[in-house]
Length: 283
Image (cartoon, rainbow, N blue to C red; front, side, top):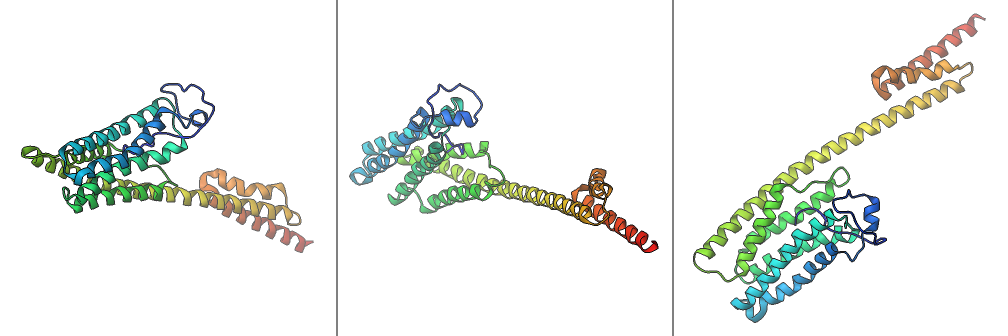
């Protein structure tokens, strides 16, 4: 749950270069059956296995809960390694981009929901965490046209806290450890809310900047189109000269911008037309 897609789709099977820059060629070379993708698939397969182990014998057998914890721990560890391997060895694939975040959400969601069903974890905690994860996923799609929200240190710390707290709840703990796991979970909830609000802030800022850039680009294109139209009309006017065509460009080059250049061009064309009409009237 690092926020960085781990793996990706097929190609020539060429040996990747460690630490190399990712690019189109690197993506095309990454095989579907690379180590990063395999770890992601293992994590996906561990989800139903974890649930079965957790609920075995009514869900309260300490031994089976320990087995369930082992499955959960392996899943969380593979989450750390598959992303690192994918980035270090250029193993990013389309499959990994989709499967990695799904596997992350699946194992954590399965743990929280299962613990709440067993009565070990309050439903409001499960609801807050799952609502945040789903909301941030939708938020990423909301701004993906404009920019990608990077994974922050707070987000990584939140993931660590969630995994640690959920793992402690999977085990059958009593006494001080049972109290400790509650406070670890509270820390995870606070980090979940705080980092979620920070992601919302980033998403709003990035979207505003993206929309502003789009509006500026549209205005520039409109100004250029207007200048080109006026220049064409100047050529098509009887008696029009090259000087009439150069007028809009001169306005733009003066630093007034495409739209102002277009207005200057329109004014010059009109003046040239009026001068021709006056000359014809005198003749």
